Length: 616
Image 1: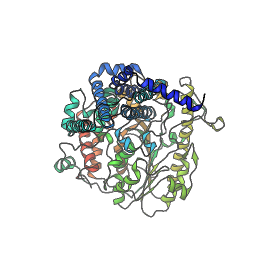
Image 2 (image 1 turned 180 degrees about the horizontal axis):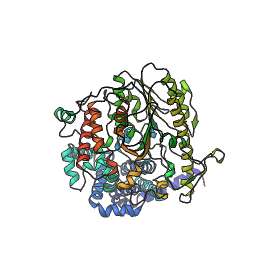
Image 3 (image 1 turned 45 degrees about the vertical axis):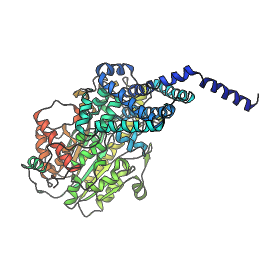
Image 4 (image 1 turned 60 degrees about the vertical axis):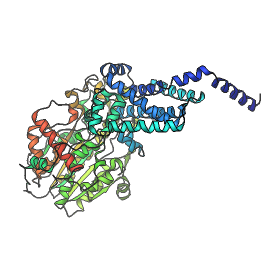
């Protein structure tokens, strides 16, 4: 049989199938169920591929589920009104449902964050969506993808379409959009609609509970409605002045210190895990924190497995990401010169410089840093060209950053404020070549895959410790007074979904939302060290201190006798009453915590997008 004859027979068969009236009717009847299946696929992935968790969501939050169903049906209906052909509308809705479901699952597995509306705007940089993705996708997801594809194909095969002309369809679509805009145009209106489904725009304050209580689509829509930083109702110059009224500028009382701030990627005491190590991975850290001119402990961060930009923003500005839209990149809101700790040092004659061996556009640092007070910012390309970099697993090594650090510190006649972000110990943590293993790691608690990730991470941690030791030796040999803050930004992603921590018994998988668990999940080590005797400042002892990220630079100014602004003194006053707090810790509210949250919300709004009444 010739090829043309075969094709003709196939075409004839397809036409016969297309002409079966019952199948055409079935295709049309299936249209309302298609978006609901897409919604189910998104929720299935939102709850980690666990049908029991999806069932629990439906039982506990039925109105949120109803809201999501209405939303997806309306989205599909509007798309269908514009497209007319059902397979086009289904293809569009199905594609985005699959993409959102996959990205959301991978982001949660990789760094604990859900997929947020602002991620769409960053789609031109894939790393902004899923940074170094890891984790296994549930097998049933691919079955769901296959169902969507076959459904779209069936709608095409049976030529399902709306029997309406464009004069009816287009006005209907536009009218539907206008109604939606009217219902959600202002915060009070959108809040009223959400309240009817037992939901609230304020759910965006804590994303873990937002996606758990409202489902993926409900939480995503809430985040869309919360993308702006809302002006606090009481915000005014008088309110800001009242906050700062009791605090004044404190002049410098000592010689200016060079200040070095090192954000060490995923720096964490791996010895907390249920594992044994053939040698100590942190010998320098252990020795340094015992020195009399060192102060160390834990910082409480708002990042987990990823999201470096959040603690980075908190430390450099003294503000907090607690009151920014969920999942937002804080640097995206910086569009004018703003008061930060960086600008504070610059205004007193410091040369301010940032070094980061990665794409300088990532997290929009290249546009934000100059507005925050940095005179210079060297990303990977410039560091590689000027100084050369060594690489491990595709990331610049921590040790190779010492050369540019020393170059700028030694070559400046002005006092220096230097901020350094390392990359060597960034996820993922693939298996090592056995020949490269220097520290043997064993554990009866960790499965082989997780143990392999822990082994790789441990070697990067050991290299970070070597860099810390070399940096402290360099500081000790300097004539100029120098202080260093060295800290981890977040816990590492070891095995995905906190596997290493759960298998070690540090965390219980069914109790991750308790305060006790979150104190582990959102804490990382820090050490402040100087080649001069430091004032203890806010720290009652040299070790085992606990502090929030946004206090640290004010504490260093206090410890080194540097100028302090009224806002810095306000923070130090709050620290005496609330040593640490952030929204992710889910701490029980006290009057002091409520007062601190109010002050931080007002000042963060004021400096980031407000009128700058608190600027120094």
